[in-house]
Amino acid sequence: MADKPDLSEVEKFDHRKLRKTNTEEKNTLPSKESLLNKKKKHVRRPKIS
Picture 1: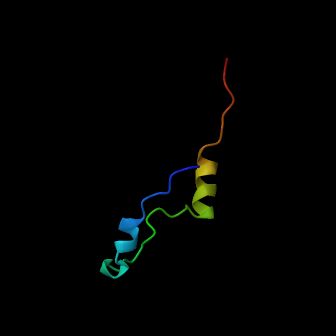
Picture 2: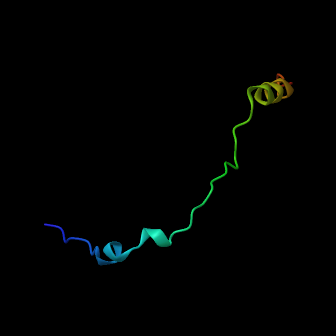
């Protein structure tokens, strides 16, 4: 049988000491239009041998 984890520090933890934070999304997905523009710019050309 596995040993039980020590939860004494968790029991002492006071969540009221935490600060309130506001999250901001930094990495948004590109728009559909920008993806279509990139796709149009990168048209594959056939290889010349």
